[in-house]
Length: 402
Ligand code: ACO
Image 1 (cartoon, rainbow, N blue to C red):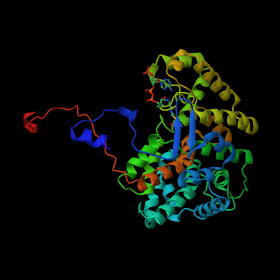
Image 2: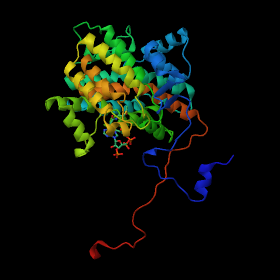
Image 3: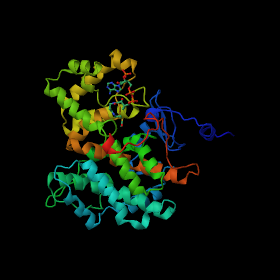
Image 4: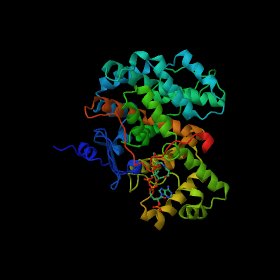
């Protein structure tokens, strides 16, 4: 077999592909997407079946280890995670150093980066036992870190994890509970958040996962790689879109709920306004995750009492866009983020926590990709080429002569 990459390099050819629209960076056996047909599968299982029947921890196991666990395997996995939910007391003090109005995403990535200073015994990417320890530590501690980032922003005391609870329930308790008041999350809310985490758990070579792989390709440890992924997720064109959607809907309501005027602005590309929560690099059809979430939004908002007016604006926007040539021709459909913000708000999360929730869901996907890459003999350090467009050679002129 001819190695096309090596051959092109030998004759000095590079491909220019901004945004990697047509470039595969790796082979992967984790997630399958058919963007034209609107299909998403984790390890071969359709997302619809996992969303209906699985749990977030079971799906995490599936993504990371490649098979659905037996009941005993799942119990052991759950139990190991349960025993690692506490944060080191010194790490807890980090939160005091951030300004009160800090966005929780950089707080999250900083704390995850700091984990590599606390757990120096699990940093070797080629030692299976150490990789396993980092995996469990991250899955267990990220919900605690996320809850503390929230508590910091509202000036409330941190709660220790209560390990009699499940992962999602515990996260909700640490987020919304208070020391003197017993808090047990509504099971409807726990189930819905668990399902949203399943829907976010992996999406092959998206921006944050590619970032995790690129950083990891230098053999950086798992904490460092995933901290970088969290920063990539923060951007409004990626995970930050769920926050941007809610801000967009609030803005439309503020201007009297006029959907038509907003859509006109988007079509005219006025001030770069986009219909946030629409469009996807891979899906040129309805995002299958959005279809599930739309149903959940109706159920959850019905039970928890959500913002019906905002849901109405979202539905009107979707209907308006799906029947408009601009969106039809460009194959722009709602993506996973179009309805999640409405659900998160109904659950009581402030807008700035939305992307943190995305990160909690995406974590097992990042871990699975990092581990797959480290085991793949074809892995090389990620080092793209460029097409140089700068000055030709010129001679240095001393400052006194310029
Ligand atoms: N609103 C209006 N127009 C849009 C939108 C949108 N949301 N998305 C794409 N377009 C237009 C572009 O302006 C472009 O039009 P043109 O051909 O006239 O120039 C055309 O559709 C193609 O779009 P690209 O930007 O080339 O598509 P790309 O694959 O690079 O971008 C992206 C995908 C970033 C998701 C884009 O659709 C977008 O910005 N959407 C809004 C942000 C968003 O919801 N992000 C979440 C993505 S999902 C996730 O991360 C979970």
